[in-house]
Image 1: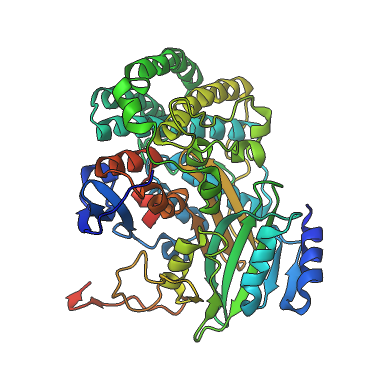
Image 2 (image 1 turned 90 degrees about the vertical axis):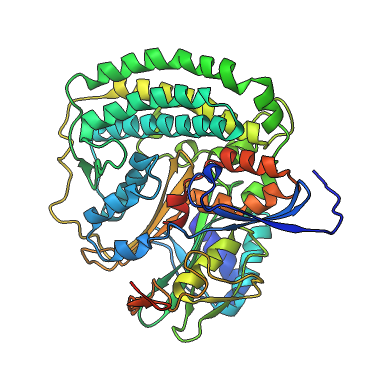
Length: 155
Length: 373
């Protein structure tokens, strides 16, 4: 299915919850209101015309005024791709977890939490995955200062 | 495989220095006697925060970092990054660059699969295939050394071109190598793949059903081992792969259910043959040309974002790059195939024997450098 049709289907189903779309990008995307992301993902995964069964990538981007969570979805059945984004505030970013739709999201959400401090509500096992459990700060944020000590060890 | 638990669990720590975990992976096994009720992977021992590094160097400077993720298939790693930046900048490369890239990527795939097969034998207790595989891999590494001076971490693919052209006469030596190597795949099969003990150890172990594989985002040989005919080179071709004639190998379940360790292993062996076919075709397609003619003076992509995925030996490696018109990437996010398959490991290993855990880790062929990045 063409990206225009996917965007039209999303718009028809969710209306105002789709905040904006950019379809002429190399990687066409729509911005979804954060509380609606789980419903949107369930719809994209289950609808017969879309069947997005494969979560290719879930990651964060820090844009100084906001944190974006990016979901790149792919359908193994229809071979089409679409990208969703959520804009979150830098203070206290919270978004529902989609690990119940794609199990692949489990580890990717943990990584995004580890690197950006995004809290995925309803995840169940949200803890650091790449950094040690007692690491302070979120390394991929643009204002991250590299620590000069880890515990009582100088680094 | 369903197991009944008596309720008396023991926690067994495996790794991070265990020889069969292919690097520094730590597994927390909850065991009931010999049966593993749960296997919790702990990763991050090799974490260097590649993505933070990438934000602090210029685009061409990122390529050596990509080499160090999956160090057994560095050609494929840097290829993906170069293609992503080229897509963002709208650079077209000439036929010679495309063909050399295909030759190098496929030779590297053969080398990587040989390591996978060889170390798998070593894990399970058979040392001979390891020596056979590494003997032939050395010959491929010799070609790389001749081409770009390095044996493991190449920095050979550049944005818009290549570091050097092929040395004189290398095409013929590659063809000679293929003539020598292709019959040896049959030898390896007779010696190892169809060995009764090996089949017994792998054919009913670590079953990954197709639905679970897709839901966990498993890709590459591990997905094809579950019987799904999906290959980025066929289904979303890049580098003019659509012009090459090759088959996508899938697990057939010859000795047990589809999606077992044996199927995943066998897909890699079959892929080695297909890669040989592709290399032969790419050598035939080589035309004269300047491999550096499209290299930009300064890499400064327009603002925007791109997602590019390529089929690496371990699955599809994706680069999501956000550019703010600067000379450094604003954000590079890597979708690592080993990271996603490690997420599914817990599912595969539930109810297995402790000795089978080793067989399962070997069959998914992970490189910890890429999981931890």
